Image (cartoon, rainbow, N blue to C red; front, side, top):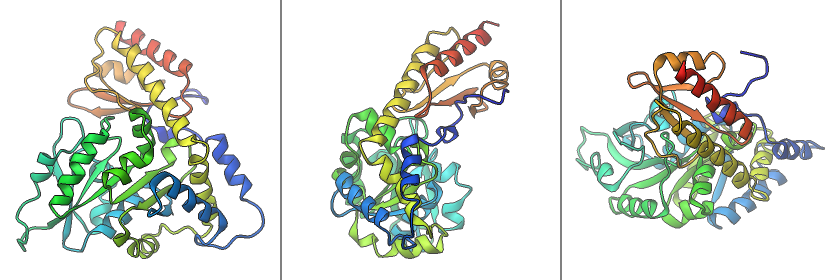
Length: 345
């Protein structure tokens, strides 16, 4: 692999968007009050109110795992549990942090497309009051999902109504919420506040930030707990202005939407190109910036000598290709051509 290369393994591989870097540089003057009592974080709160509603409270953190752990812990008592899709990031890609750090039981549900439904929630919404069973308290969903699919506004509304009718709360892991909103053609508020989401883990890093996420609380009853949980979870930045500045950049002049829309467009370009290659199977719909395809293992092995991407399922040969804010049409076309060459070899 050459020193200069482009990968399709993760949108985390991409660099920092210039407007985010400029925002960080702009606030790097003089002194500012530490731990979030600064003017930059105050401005971030105003922007979050604009995008999510006046009741929204924002708590910047370092990473998505931290955001999820803090949000879920705020929504649960020690004996309570979280219902999630089996493929959810909190279940398969966070090193057990929800269990180890937050002490939460995860009730997982197999899904075909990564999306929960009321019926799937009800698989584990059982045995209420049974002291022998961790009691369900929260349903967490991933938007867009780990399988690249997005919940529609109607789907979210139905799910939210059902979850709340069962006396549960609804958390949204939004590491790629921007990609979902861009795909659906809706504002951030329409897939969070307006459909009854109680708390959001808002992602910035995968969408052009250097390293910035946030817990956005939409249910006021959760607000008091989050500052203390953020501190005890080692997610409270002392020089908060530099974390907040990244989120300010994303939420200003629709940078979040521009970046996500471009990444989605590149994924659709890649999907279109590889569907035309004999032998490549694309079995999942492409709602956001992920493309899943099944390749012969030998082809995957040869491609991975020059391109970084993950094998999603070793049993089926399914791989995952992610596009990012800085993926170019030339990147996509070159990769598709390489796939075509290896498939015909």
